[in-house]
Image (cartoon, rainbow, N blue to C red; front, side, top):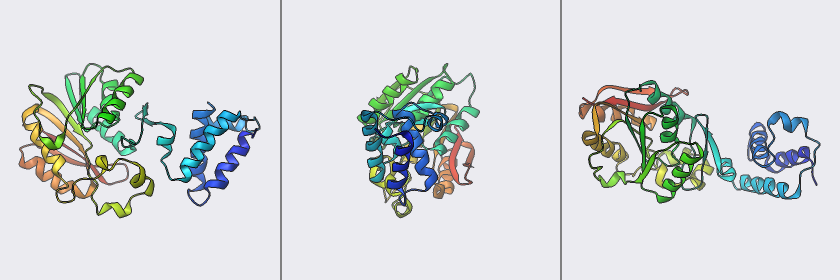
Length: 283
């Protein structure tokens, strides 16, 4: 049976050239924590410990997946987001740090008076569940057209011990939501253009769901327009709408919100200095 140190060396030798050295070590630490239950410090202390065969098989399976460029989050079946743990699979996007910034902005703009929140295109449920965890007094709803995504979001709600409702809804069909009204509507819709495709990482293109990534080539703002249409009937007066956006769309999103009568429209930079978030208040 190999030692922990030998397994780490195998990761380095078989992934060299495919990933930077520090990233390989990070992948190994993530895999070892999941399979062996050891933190980084414990891995160092116990580096000469032998690893049982069935655990070696799990580690090697992750290694082989990395050689195929599969995202480590899909290989492990989870990722961390806003201090919480979420199950992920190929039916949903892997939550990004930029989206954590969107959640933080929503929370900064919210108070105890917030009663109802709607997350459109919820995917794994990371936005909706993070908001519910931080605002347990609020009713939070998540909608998505993907049955597989909704099933996963419901699992993530249970994992994170929150009670909330997810249901099927297709943003592009402009369906009615009945008498439901919301204080906040938030969405991270598909916004990647086909022009962006050439600059994207191969593991994103090969493994993450294109339906959640790409906006229609002939109308890349259609999701935003339809959500604003929905907000006209279901966002309360004084309610706030938040979007994650393609940095190329900032001026268009600003115009869209202002043309529909939203005030205090703001396009905000993320921590990397890119305009990736938008907010407006309904009058």
